[in-house]
Structure formats: structure tokens, C-alpha cells
Amino acid sequence: MKVGIVTPVVTRLPGAHARWERDAGIEEVARIVVEAERLGYHHVTCSEHVAIPEAVAATRGATYWDPLATFGYLAARTTTIRFATFVLVLGYHHPLEIVKRYGTLDQISGGRLILGVGVGSLVEEFALLDAPFDDRGARADDALRAIRASWGREVPEYHGPHFEYAGFVVDPVAPAPEIPIWIGGRTARSLRRAVELGDGWAPFGLSNDTVAVLLERARDTDAWATRSTPLDVGLQPGALDPTAEPAAASDAIEELLAAGATTLNLRFVHHSVEHYCEQLTAMRELVQLG
Image 1 (tube, rainbow, N blue to C red):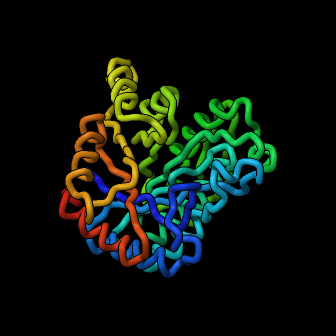
Image 2 (cartoon, rainbow, N blue to C red; image 1 turned 135 degrees about the vertical axis):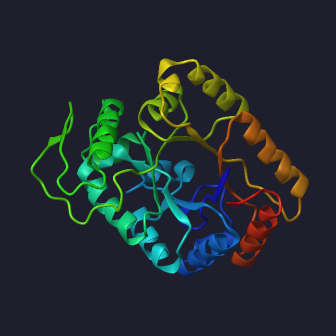
């Protein structure tokens, strides 16, 4: 089982962040990530939004650090912990843009990138970026195939219904021709996309029962039966408090595992950087890391 954290500070959702995060910066983030690495955590996350409409900021949140810049800094401060984009919105980028920019990050971090991607749902942001919205699912599927075909290749080539290219050099490239791809979302379609085109499914906003039902249905499909590798399932509980309520934290983890989790993306109750690091240590006593 892989255990990572949903990195504090870099994303602030209404009602889900601590007061101290509002004034925190990259040094506080780095302190937490370095400590997570020391304790054996598998990965940290950073999500993408370019610009949030004011009208929905109160519900969506307005703070989203850029994953590329954030992980580039953290890569220089660490050696083993992995970096999961949780998630990049495929429709905001040409596939080769992702291959070049995040392939460079994968290169300078020593192959520690996990490419978490999603289809996206914020209509106003798509319009702002002049990105097509109505066919975003089909375009995302084509983008995923293009990324697979191009990752780690200096002269990539792809011919699909939405993206087509050949005869271009991409340098530098990722250190290997394969990259773990997690698919985010909260629908059966996102799970099907993960089964067909990804290495993992990382849903959000779903109950454990719903996740278990969706996974059970997916296991009965031909796409699941023909996979060459098991599907990673990354689930996240509500905020855990392993220092004050270790039994409740353990129970929450067991419920996620029963629902089908193979990877955990953890959030904690925390009141300061110091308290967050204490929670990391306490959780390490409850789950096997590595």
C-alpha cells in the first residue's frame, strides 16, 4: 500500500484548511514534504487551476499553486518522495506541452513524477483559456493516448482524432518511456477511463460504498479483464487526527481498504506546521509505509 499526503497550503478549499495555511509559504511546505519523505511517505500532491471565477471561489476555493513550479522547488529539496499532480486538467494543454514540461520535471526529479489528470468541469475556466468544453471527454481520451505515445521520446509521433503531430523534437525528455497516470473524477466514466487508459483511479467526493460498487461493476468488464497490470485505486478519507484519535484514524483506513484502496491520499487535522509533522509521525505508527 502506498501512502501519500494531500499537501497543505498549496490548495485551500473552503472549510478544509487550517488558519495557519493562509500565511504559509514554500518553506513551510518544504518542511512538511521533507519530513514526509524522512518518515517514508510515498508521495505529495499539488492540483491545477489557472483562474477561478469570483462567483465560485467561495465553494471551489481560490488558492491553487502551480504544480510545475511547486514540484520543481520541492524536487531540489528531496530525493525519494514522489510528486503527484492531483490533478492536471487535460483540456487546458496540448499533449506535447505536458510531455515537455512535466517530462522535464520528471527528468530533474530523477523519475519521481506521477501524472494525475482529469477532464475538468469548470466551464468558465475552459472559456477563459479558449479550450473546448463540450467534447472535453473525447479530447481527454485522445490526449491520454498521445501522452502515452510521446512520453520519453525525443521525436514523438501521434495520429489521433483530435491531436496529430510528427517531425518535432522534444528535448529534454522524461528519463523513461513510461509514466504512472492516475485518472481523477467522481463518475463511472472516470473509472472506465482509468481502466482503459490509466494506471490508477483517484476519485474524490464519493462515499466508500459508492467506490466499492463502481469498482465491482468495473471488474466485470472486458477492459478490466484485459489489463496487463492491476489498477491502482487512490482514495482519501476526511481529515484524520491520529495523535488525538488513533482508533478512529485506523478505522477510517480500514474502511478505505475494504472499499478497494491500494493507495491512500491522506488529509489531517492540523493547527500548525509542527502539529502537521506530529500527525505525520503518528500516522506512521498506524500504517505501514513504503
